Length: 90
Image 1 (cartoon, rainbow, N blue to C red):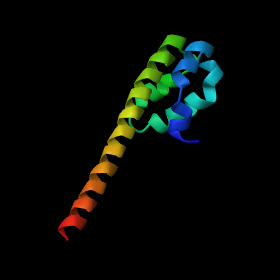
Image 2 (image 1 turned 30 degrees about the horizontal axis):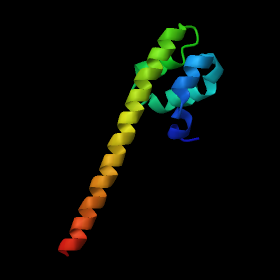
Image 3 (image 1 turned 90 degrees about the vertical axis):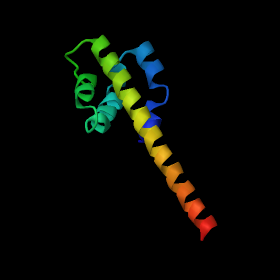
Image 4 (image 1 turned 45 degrees about the horizontal axis):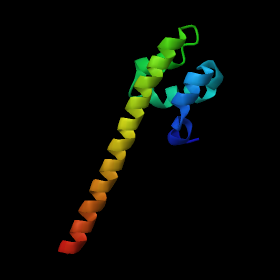
């Protein structure tokens, strides 16, 4: 399952259903986020912690994932422009 598939509307569902109802999705997001937001990833799946702590961790993980997706998209666009410019010059 892709990050975008998991992430789409998850915030709304978490607010309605609570984090325990979406444990599998949160655990998968935490696994993905572990490399670049280890503290938030750990808090996201700390089932002995409070609901608000998990929701706050979700907000951090969500922001970081969106930023990384935007950075990746920007890099892809930049590379495409460079290739296109090279073709025009060549």
